[in-house]
Length: 65
Figure 1 (cartoon, helix red, strand yellow):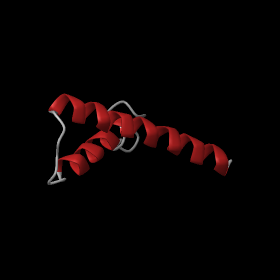
Figure 2: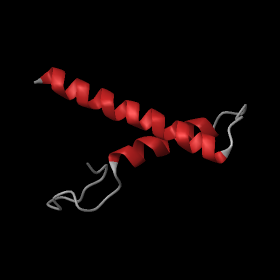
Figure 3: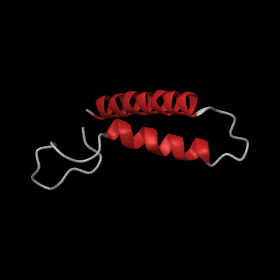
């Protein structure tokens, strides 16, 4: 799934939604003045959060049907 697909694009271009979520999580982590993560650890944590957001998104979507 893409975060910013082009209209009529069939989802082949644009940023992956998981990467978008991870970027937003990383932005939040990096904005913390008490940042205490190394880059590798921060990136891993951001993707863990992104994976949880993807799961929550699916669960919410499934509940709506």
